[in-house]
Image (tube, rainbow, N blue to C red):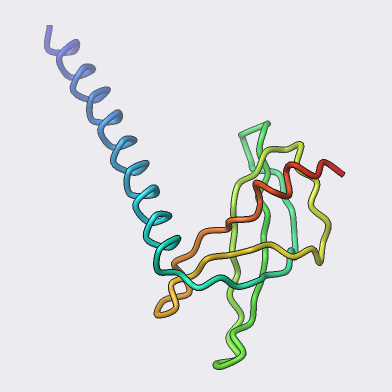
Amino acid sequence: MWATVIVIVVVIAIIVLGIGLFARSMSKTRWLKQHGTRIIARVTDSIFAAGSGTAKIIIAEWTDPRTNTTYQFRTYTPQSVRVQLGESVDVLIDPDKPERYTITSVESISMKKR
């Protein structure tokens, strides 16, 4: 009896956590679309996401000309997306905190299917 109750509580907690993380991600993206600054980053690497089998991680870099600080941006994409090293991607950043970002042009890259 107690084992069943514990399992149900754990499953509900996992579902609530997942919904919360998804809502937070959507809120961040919405805020960046309204208030973010668009920059162009260069793709520096593309690696397979461990354990996913269907996704890979695109890594892009951009150097802030004002501070000469280089930032690295990562995003998951479908494995079928072919991105070449040196290719440009659009990134929306929080101008006050560039570590807060979303890569916006991966969707258009995936349509190209090289």
